[in-house]
Image (cartoon, rainbow, N blue to C red; front, side, top):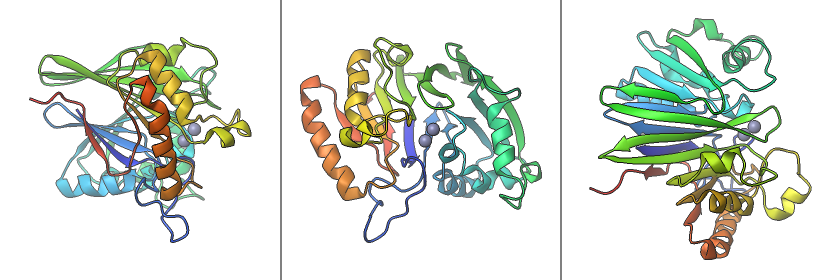
Length: 292
Ligand SMILES: [Zn+2]
Ligand SMILES: [Zn+2]
């Protein structure tokens, strides 16, 4: 299983400028892909990072895509109208997305993708896309299995504290007899107590990817905004006994210099936990399979 980060930024795309360089950690909003089994792809969220990913996959001639959405906030959907393969004949797109408590009738992500890709916001409406779509909903604590020949992926969800709701996912695949897993817990405020649904979901996982958008000082005035800090993510990682922690969903105002400084500081303070920690970078690939 290989994870690739196509977008690591929170809230809004943040292109690199001379005053605020962002090219090292990345300026595109949330989008990851997981390569699994022989030649399968799971795309997690469709932030602006999806645009470049789609161009690459169209060039490779890929025609089958499975998406997994965490929630409907714009920074997790906005790349979809620019996903080149969706405009092509012969492409199939399967979408798994949250059934959140208290949600309106109908599939939340299906409605949201149609809404953002319609007049007056976008000229080429969703119904004009040539790909064939199938939509499925996922509920917390409900297992979902993707299979492809002898390979399979197990997906389990847990609710996160975030305005409007958000799901964290534990994704587990078996390779050479050993199960590997990672947990993607984007947009969330630190859960008030421990153990909580996230701690249980992330128990003994190989990698926890978590939302540490703010510094501790920034968080003081942003309680209730739905995001956390690297230190609070580490608390979750320790409680869950995760083997590695990566921070993502960076604040749009944080330049590469700021993030590099915060990462170094965080790595020093996390040393006593024994958990390797770091900040994700757009363009980074992580191989979760054990060395052969
Ligand atoms: Zn977000
Ligand atoms: Zn959000």
